[in-house]
Image 1 (cartoon, rainbow, N blue to C red):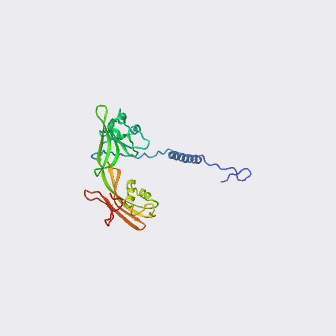
Image 2: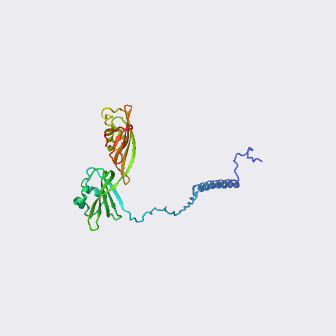
Image 3: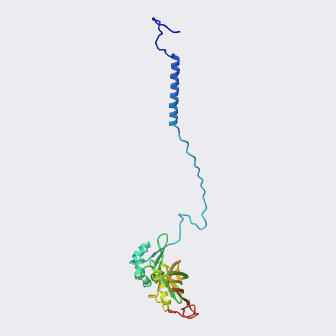
Length: 286
């Protein structure tokens, strides 16, 4: 039903919502806003998941037989070795080996039995054995790594030990070295000795090749590129280290397409020499 004014036209005044409806809408908006902020807050303060629990298991294992635990006291001597270099002095070598033996250098300098140490050959070995307290047990100077004595290869060294009375005693020692057989081959590219160096053949062995086949091959004029050779020779070792080389046992040399052979042969009780496969003696027979 329309309300009419005084002039009989419809009233143009706006209609207003009821107070109850307004309060309902306002409460609904507050609830939504509270829910959004609460959700955002909950997301912001989400605690990370607990770190995974790590379990560790340990087991003590027995050491194999013969293995000494770390930290255990050892009574075994400490053996040090150095190679003599050009320009080395006795004092410098003892210092390099951590030797602190009172009076040792003076003894080595003046004792006649230690005279072999007067000459320090580059490449030769000097060894010392020290106790855990750094006391000297012995000193060895291997002045002759390999030598032939009565037909047997031996190694010779000077050995110095404390005498228990505040001084030292020096003696010369020798021991038969181990003999091994080595084989090598090479190809000539520029020279014989260049090829032997490339094949790791000792110089003492390389020098024997022209001595043995010198009557058949002129090693100054006849060599050609791609000439080939094979050689079997002796080497000597002492305490697991190579100390020298011996004689050639067999040699095959191919020069300009022709092959020359030589083999070492020593009848019982007689001197040896080199022969080809036909039994003819080669130059350089012993």
